Length: 206
Image (cartoon, rainbow, N blue to C red):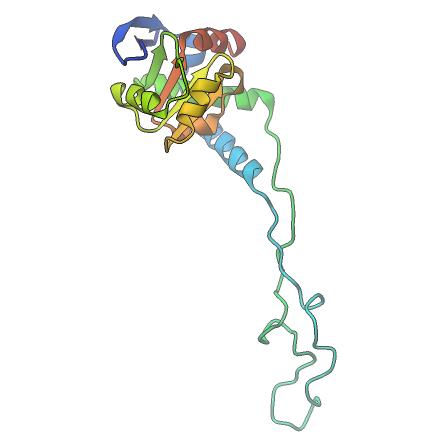
């Protein structure tokens, strides 16, 4: 059974906790994690790129010179793709890049990502992940104490003090136990979770 270190908000080790085998102890499926990350990045794309085809650029209505006898290559329009100010061949148009993954695939990817973090020893459980006030300095001090520069912080519910204190720290992402992202977990070096949030994760995703 995988284990994780339990620390307090000063970064001091206060114990250990057993992690669920069903979530943190499976054999990671790399291909499924790759699919989940690819899906996340595709869903993040705005898809707003756009360019004009030769039918849409202005001008070029007249044939620039006669077909034969000039010694030059035949041309039908000054807005053909090979001309300066001409249209774009196969011009990109706004489109939706998003697609959905099966629920079972997403769940397996999440368990695989969490199991990989647990196997690396990069799951840190906090006995009460909370701050008395919005203070980035205090959050940075905590992350420094647990030697974490790029982490995902998981709380049970939205904790405004934690969210606002961490949002200006590069590489740090905050989320809740029921809104875990495979991309955020894979992209982070440490998975730092509140003890109450860990119980929710083990209950919801088991």
